[in-house]
Length: 340
Image (cartoon, rainbow, N blue to C red; front, side, top):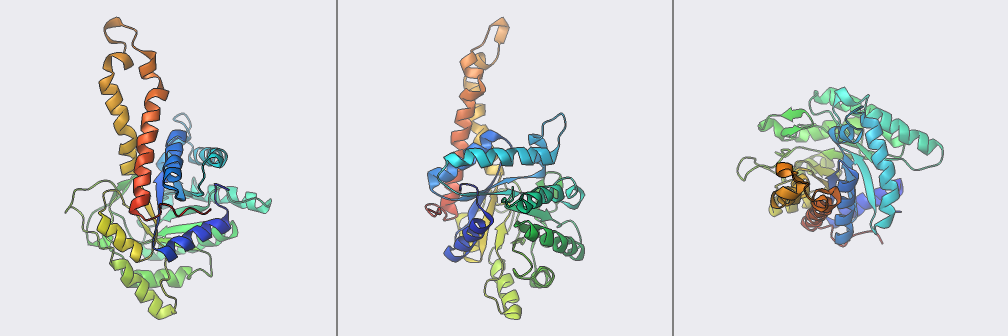
């Protein structure tokens, strides 16, 4: 059961919340980066989350058609087969989806899973993200209500982002300013619109200064202690302790102290993309520089097939990215927590 069933995915999130750890959510764009993520989880003896962004899905769909749905479905089907060889459980997730891509990404993928569930099967993906942070909160939550109902019917968990994450990802960008901090009022409005589980389970990407990409120390002010205030504000009104399952966006480059504070305050999932991209690419660049005359047919020579064979440098890339995933598991305290 390497791909989590809906029941097991819920158990994974419950265990993370109770144990104050989080799962690394690793963005992948190919079968090889998928294997790197799975290998990293296996070596850390940690369960985890594999996710595909709209840009990643478009890339997976091929540069001829650039079809996001076929790209995402193809990799998910591939994952269902190859994950059987790894001794961990993973959930499949789709990352940021803004309003203008709902009809060509998340909605069709929910329909795919709904059809599977109607046949007595499990959903293809275990969760999907709706990123309405560019919309007004009222419009954001209205769309989230409709998506949550459909997701719950298909046994899928919805992730919602209610306020902006700074920086840029897949063409969606937000300035780095004071709007990057979710308020208690934002959290209360979210609970009122989406409930606290009775209408379907959802993950909440609240903002506490998060920024996509890598940033130098001092350029961004993260305030993960803010999550405690959001939990307390909603708990006071609804009488449910620690009501939210939080997601940490823009996790690359965060300090150990920032991560630890976030975990203490209800973060169960942290996204990693920039750091793992670099970890994958760095050994490839090193290989190309070290083997310049072999990977290129310089001055009319024939080069060296063994050096430009994608398997040669691809294995180095997979190992490096896997190592970064194991490091993320250690940082998020998920090492050794896999479901037996």
